[in-house]
Length: 574
Image (cartoon, rainbow, N blue to C red; front, side, top):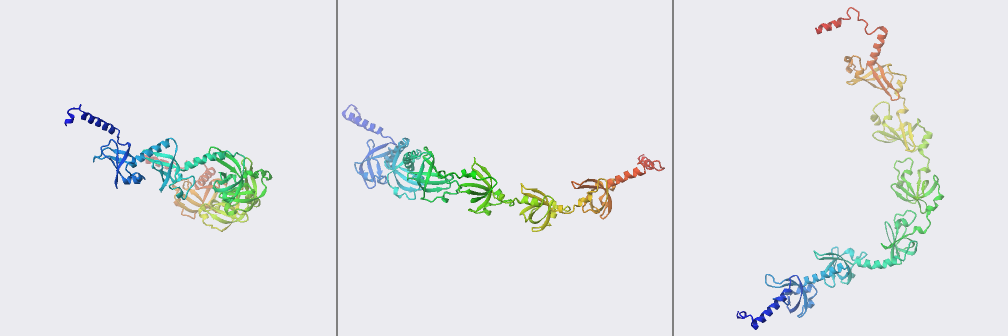
């Protein structure tokens, strides 16, 4: 260490100079920075680099250069950019990476292009799930392009685009993960947009486009090609004045038609056209038609709620299901007609503002309810057949009129349980019923069967309250007696409280059935068909009559033993 004993010597000063130079170079080397190295040696597996300031030469794997497409640069004297990962690892070696340096350089360029909204040049190298892989030509960075962004129209085969230089727009950058998403479709649309704007400017509302070609159609309209430079839409409602279900009913691909421009949207670069407006509006002829008159109409469309018909080509009308038939409960146009049928109808409504015409098919026939009312007014009897039954009524069909009458179970019989009476009838039975009610507007008729029979309640027509009648005891229970007035078909109940004046005698069990007894009418209402019978009332009436004829209620009190009972009761208490 003699050289350091005297620092003023020439040797020590030269050593100091060399040491300072080396330290200044080392300060510029920072881990994570891209630096440039010069190839000094090439072997089968490695490439050795000289980087000024490092204490040793870093190595690069030859396979890394091959994967980057830089195998031709594996020559002595060539310069390569690398990323300085570690100045010294645990083994004392310098770690560098050429691929990472390339990726970082490429990412910086992508970020710059994205910020400036500039397009980049790349080539499609391979397919992957959901799209393709694109390589940036300048940096070799790999990017993803979704399948929907490859072109402005669906492509079944993209082999003609592989490895070809193409323009792409950067649409998404993930700086954290280092992923980039690009779009070729956006470049195509931007190019077309400028050209399309110039084309759209040539058209204005009212222009007539000659010989436009049918290009395609969908459920909402038909697309036409105009001079191979513009696609226009004719909406379904603008195809014809008559109802159109789908454009393929009228057009074929390749046909040529004249179009009228009705809308021009310069922002969306869209042109809307019409075919029907090139011909006169058939609704202008509506003045030739009058309300409540018969006309012929052609069925053009069948729906669940009715049918659409044409009075003349293009003049559509609605035939609602409620106007199909007088007698059918839920008539179906699909069952009654087929497309193309010509039917008679009556115009029921013309709304010029809403451009709507309503027609009726049933008005071409006489209303069967009016016909029935003329021939069989309320109170008339008519023959019918049981058509259907339910839990509370019978429907009786009058074959001459194709009408069903409603017969409630309460109108089957004057006697008996209505539900039990209903079980006596079945479909197909012949019945003679009386018409009780006709509602023509609601298309309803109510009939009765018991009304055709003699009303057993007429037996009480000449009776009044407090009259005495003779009844036969049918049965008894804890509630009272079931009795039948002699000569009457109806049975009535005498309540337990109405059996006798004396409570001790008001026992239903006193009667076993078959007895003939008298009772008084306690209440009667012919209109409500209500009668109440009472034995108690009869006794009260008889007592009252006896007192009025033979004396007062105090009669006999002056007899020798008239007060005997009172004296016995008094003595008993003492």
